[in-house]
Length: 367
Image (cartoon, rainbow, N blue to C red):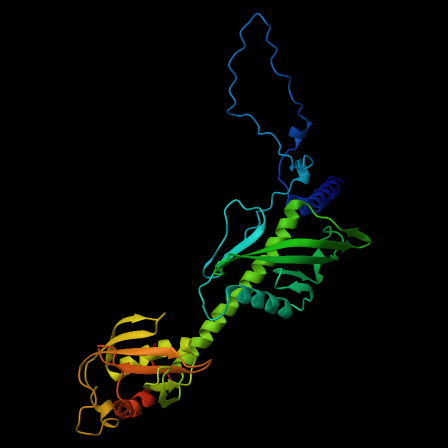
């Protein structure tokens, strides 16, 4: 008999623990007796006596106008706060801002910042199979179609099954671009919400849950943006290491130059590898103006023998300058100059062409 009672008591305790664990994960543990506490009246001091000095060190702050007085006891969730994660290079958040907002600064000049953000957002939605309800680049607002996800809601331990809940959400993304166009803030707001659980439908959420939903989707967008940047950088490095074709031609000023079959952002770092292989040391550089200040140290031994077979020295040791400039959407011009910025003559450019083109076309140069 005692054994039966012990087993029954154990089962009852486990059942209670199983039922309560679902709520306890999100609420504070311990007693809620404080909810029964009533506010005490202030000390009444006769008019003919001096009132004692009361300290306000431990006074509770007054509730704000937007505070929900019902958020007490088990109705108050204690989950960790939802934080926007500025993962993208040049991104940051504003401290104390209640909205789900992230700021981006321009670090890549290949396209306008606003276009890069919108393209990344549209790419994320397409990858997730989420439609676009409306999009206005002029008004800088995009509204998504319904994002529907299915979640399993754990039931009591004794049911042995979990219930499925469908959650639908629609979000509005807005972009605030600074007048100079090099900084922009992306903000997301929960526009519509609907959750179904069995026959029950919930169309509203608390402000805390609303922010959690907004931050969650914003972090997914930011993570996708960062992944795209890393993927583009990996591809760019791979392109830099690949051989690039070069031909003789002229720069925008009509001077003899080499025309490299690559975009400027690929040709520029590739030039640093090629010059090092050819025996040049880069003393200084200015990427914004496409200038390289170099010193030629002479031929590099056997490697040069097959390229410069003539007994005549094609290039004297000393300081030189190079001008790297865009020559179209996918081409770049490289102009060799002396230390006074005077371009090489066409015959000298032609003499150096075989060596320059050979190294430029070589694969897997060390970075």
